[in-house]
Image: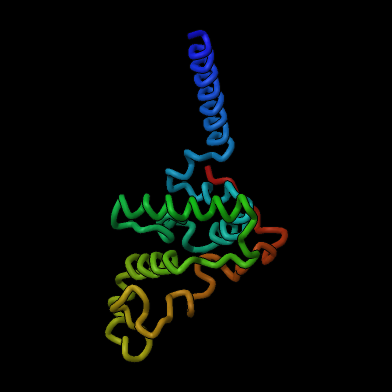
Length: 177
């Protein structure tokens, strides 16, 4: 009988240690920040500093956060599902150092950004739709011929960033108060 109570106490102690470790890791990783739309959450991992810094110096920094471009904006559940999937993929890539120096958006992420570009710039895209046969076609999530908004608008909003060494001295992360 004494062995059972000892095992029970050890199990409780192990559980408490695991819970403390989990809370500590969540604190160190700033896990709560990923539930916000604060762009600083994107630079919790140093590999996104270049993208953050170039976004800060773009016209989009005034009104648009990372979340508003890179995640679904029309559905709460889709947004947090995408956050969870992207977060999991980023965690694996950054933890095991399996990402390439030239950061590339996933196909799913590209579809979301394309949809958000068209949605945000609806007044422009509706005008351009009348010229679809010449230049633009916004009937699908992707432009019908496979082109995306950033194929032409390459420097929006991340400049010429293509990798971790693109801006080796960075543009500096400015504190917004």
